[in-house]
Amino acid sequence: MIIPYRHLKDKTGLDARKDLKLGDFSDANFRRWVDFRIETLTEFMEEVDKNIKKENPDGISIAEIYPGIGEEAVRVGADTYEMYNVVDVIAHEFSGGGGNAASKNPLDWFSRMIGMYTFRAFAEGKASWMLSYSWGEENKIPPQDPIKNLMLSNVMAGTNCWDARGHVMSGSNDIDTRKEVFKWIAENEDVFYKPRTTINPVGVYFSPKTRNYFADEFIKSYNGIMNLMLQSHTEFQIVTPRTLDKFNGDVLILPDVKCVSDDEISFFKSFLEKGKGLVVTGETGNYDITGASVEDNPIVKLLGIKNPNQRQISDGELKYIYSPQCPGNIIFRSMRLMNLIMLHGKERMIIPASKILGKILLLI
Image (tube, rainbow, N blue to C red; front, side, top):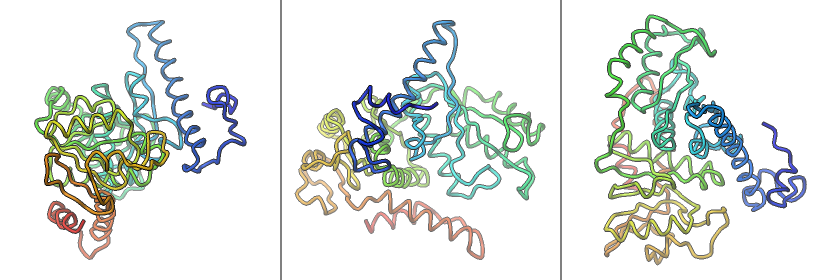
């Protein structure tokens, strides 16, 4: 879909040829251009959905989208967080790193799981189809196990499975394995796909606006915290601006959520007043919801932080941990290093992640 520059001018008054600095996220007008592209593509799919249902009320809109949860969503303009609000189903062209299932290393698999769990949080009960690939002729192992590994990852995240031959949209890498896996899924469909309610999860906040304007820093921090949740086997719930009021856990982590709105501040205030706790990391609250820096950080003000450069743990009525050193980013970088050690050492090894990550956190 091509978006003529004049549409930006009609909607915002900006001339894309001279009023913004392309690629400069410190430029307020470029950030407006980023918002405009995401809004325009989302509005287009909303119109498609309405036209489908106008002709057939039982019709279903399915958007096939390449971008995952990171900077690619901003670069392309197709944001699955926004799209899930206007279509019925999203078919995700998503790998999570490492190419097909036969080529993935351990960190790639965690990245894939984090991406899919995030899609499911965005979907709020709508279906998520995974258009991912298991095996190719260049791989030096048989296709059966990669097919099973790929399908198992989908099932564990609550996404729908798909099988194809190589990197195409048809066929199968091994039809007998496909039949075996799909039979197993069909026999246990209720167990895998019926709605589940969390018990007492740790919330991890995904901030679309922070991702839009500070994608690299936010995604590293977010992925680091999510790796910690997965590898320590901690019950978690990914929380978004649309689902804040539905979160019933006792702890909410804000992983370098640089951009916050007045509504978010109000929720965090109410959350703390209920005796629940916040874990605030990185530069959370340093920018408003438009990506502009603020003179007085509202999160720092809310928590009563005196020295915003120093790690602090509350000892009063409000429960919080304040860590400007951004532990999520540190964990993410540490996980990448651990992955390299495992892949390139003399022997592949499994390191107890909870022990290593616990030691890392003690240093933060």
